[in-house]
Image (tube, rainbow, N blue to C red):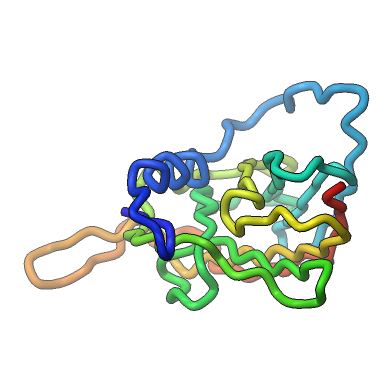
Length: 197
């Protein structure tokens, strides 16, 4: 369950959580982008996984700002990954988020995460085996998650971190992790810039 800080708009929060954690797109060809969608993209890797993020260079004030995220197996062996891509407040424990976003605003301050998201552990469906060269993808709306609307230049950095070796279930009074195969990894992307005009 999520709610906007300082607001009782719980229905809007529920929709936002559904969009943010909307499960990554299945493997396959990416959807074509409009020709005017000039994007900047950066990637960073850790071991056999690569994290890449991309954004358009400019957005009108008040418009959604969809950050595209991709986790790709760049190794030579299949890997099990956590594809939930849950974006959450960096103050939350790493068990309840996979992605942390750090956004420097035009005034030099760091943007504050705008939601209180109460998340559980990832489910079995959140884990996928990736063959070499294959990837999982997701999107997050920066304007919605951080309330961004001031005009000027922004810098964003994504940190993907998976601490779960597999789905965790309750067995009596204990939490049990099943199928302990998922890659434990932390990857920080280089910073990427965009403008609100």
